[in-house]
Image 1 (cartoon, one colour):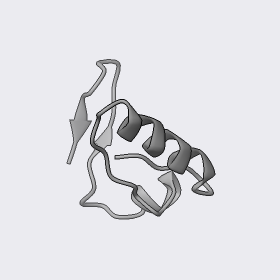
Image 2 (cartoon, rainbow, N blue to C red):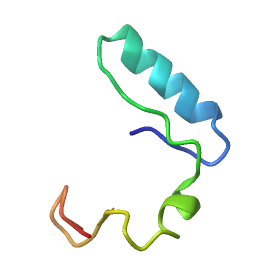
Image 3 (spheres, helix red, strand yellow):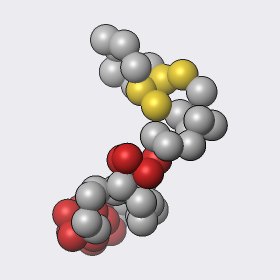
Image 4 (cartoon, rainbow, N blue to C red):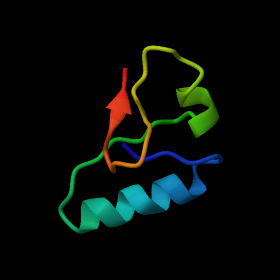
Length: 53
């Protein structure tokens, strides 16, 4: 999942990932939008990749 505040950086990142053969999806909302939904996972704590639903 790729996202950013305005979409400019996210689109460049998504394009680069596709060129590298990696598959990703664009989330059109920003981080502020993502965390406004209580059912979306959010990484927390010191361990990379740790998240709580």
